[in-house]
Image 1 (cartoon, rainbow, N blue to C red):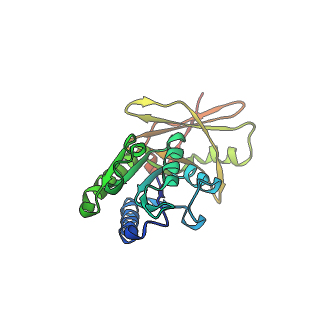
Image 2 (image 1 turned 135 degrees about the vertical axis):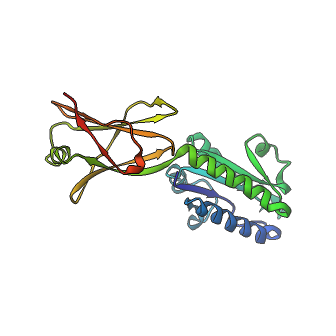
Image 3 (image 1 turned 120 degrees about the vertical axis):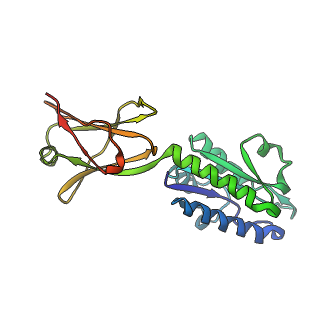
Length: 235
């Protein structure tokens, strides 16, 4: 897990503007302390769930929605409907998502039916700590991306020369259970060949397989933290 989309109203109710800005700032600090990059739609002016915002959510690993007071057409504090739309969109895409629900809005049923963290500005630390624990859990479950270098040089040379119908796949071992094989791309770089594998849980092992028309290479399960994996040609 590397990125989290932060969904919130960019035009909070005037009575709640200062505390909303403070909350956003604190959540960004918490996310960055977990080495997560925060993505928002702030430069897209907020509002409706546009295709641009949809793409940002799709390319983020998770979403945090701040249900804080927005100003409706009558000037009253209200939950921002577009934040709820972004939260629902992330859920429908299978993204981990959580809401921080302001105590001023905790009687609005469409929010209380979904998972949320109560947020009371008078006791802000409690809600922020719960969010931090959620981010830590997500990061452990989703893992991180790794750049993996292929070894040995014989295999690298074969791939560099464009051998016929090469196919690269990877498999994860999680809790002693192997996953299905998944196809990945190989990228040439000066003097080496690498692949990029997303969302490897911290305790997972990685296995690589490369198939040609006439032969197959396979590694053993090993830690991706080594950043290089040696494959052997099967006889």
